[in-house]
Length: 201
Image (tube, one colour):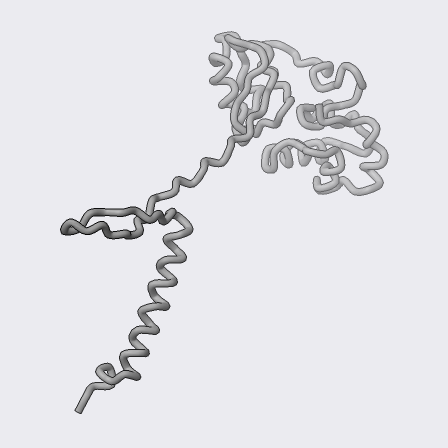
């Protein structure tokens, strides 16, 4: 008695399954390979066959930001680096801090954003509020202002100022002034009172 796989019906099933498997494998390969027809010599005869050629996936372009480094660094100036880097990274690209630098006043783990100013103070230097104020608009920079400067904003006390700094450290710099509403304790009313007094640069 013939096995079911030896009958025409059984062979048809096997052939169908084989076709499905080949089609699935072929679809996967085509995503990463390009198939080309080539001619080869086999026993004096020319035979056409197909060859799968690997396709290299293009590298994703890196976003570049520029940061202005000032103060007690070896090579101050505008530095370009990849997005996602932190203050420690740009400090290294600036040649490192001078021996007179007071790094205890700098958050080296803070994330960077395009157009940001990083100021490295010297030991014993008192950082004036001018460093946190946009010179052209007179507005407070909520991306760089320290706790004392933030408390100059309406309805912002010590606790909320600390939360603003904590938010920056955990989530990166504010991309819109409206994002300050995400800080616990700052609602629509507080934002309305401060929106004309704050900036990101």
